[in-house]
Structures are given as C-alpha cells and as structure tokens.
Amino acid sequence: MVEKVLPHFESFPLLSSKQADVELFRDICFRIYNSERKTAEGFEKIVKGAIEMNSSGKRKYSGSEILSSLAIR
Image (cartoon, rainbow, N blue to C red; front, side, top):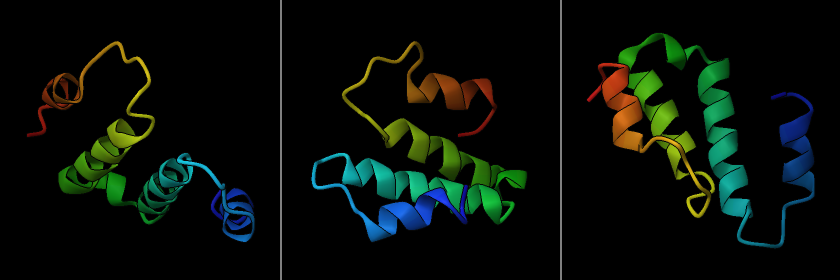
C-alpha cells in the first residue's frame, strides 16, 4: 500500500476536498507501516486520524466511544 497507492496520489493529487482525507490516510498508513500501532499513543493517533476522515459520513460509533472501548483516553 505504502509503496504503490500513496505514490499515485502524490503524483496525481485530488482536486477536491477529499484531498484532505487522502493526506490523513497517508499519515495513518505511515504510522501503521512504522509500527506505531504497537504503542497506546501511536494507536490512539491512528484511531483519531481515522475518525477525522470523511467527517460528513455516518458512523455507528463516535470517536470517544471507540477510544473508550479500547481503554485509551
């Protein structure tokens, strides 16, 4: 993913408001790729970034519900 998909979006950035979501996605991918998911702080940043993506979309659970279910605050 990091080697193929992300370079495509760097070469051909979106010309819409979705570009902000692509940048959040890129940040999340690199955090996962760099094993930041293995620490509580890193995992919290990944979850918070994912919550910010597509903020106008419908979600079954709020960000605070997700983080509290993971015992992260």
